Amino acid sequence: MVEAYILIQTEVGKAASVVQEIAGIDGVTSADPVTGPYDAVVRAQAPDVDALGKLVVAQIQSAVGITRTLTCPIIKL
Image (cartoon, rainbow, N blue to C red; front, top):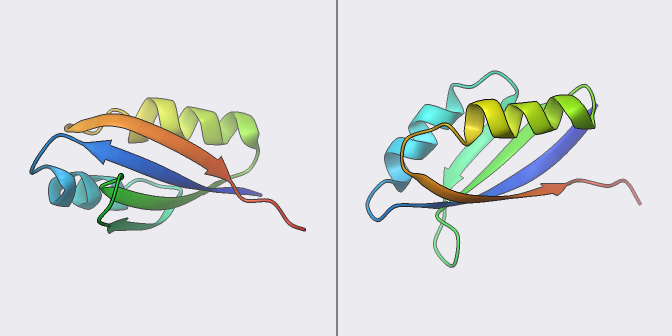
């Protein structure tokens, strides 16, 4: 299982609706609005890196109001 944090920038005033939409996507384990350079932080999981990429590109990035994402895979040290 691969897990990642996805940092999301949204259009002004869209963070709440983006978080609400993304929270319902299969594979998303948490979605929270935040302050700072990003508007939302999402934690997601997938069986492998390819599936994680498809989750981000095909489902998460298609949410209305997203302007940019940054995917940060979690590593085990």
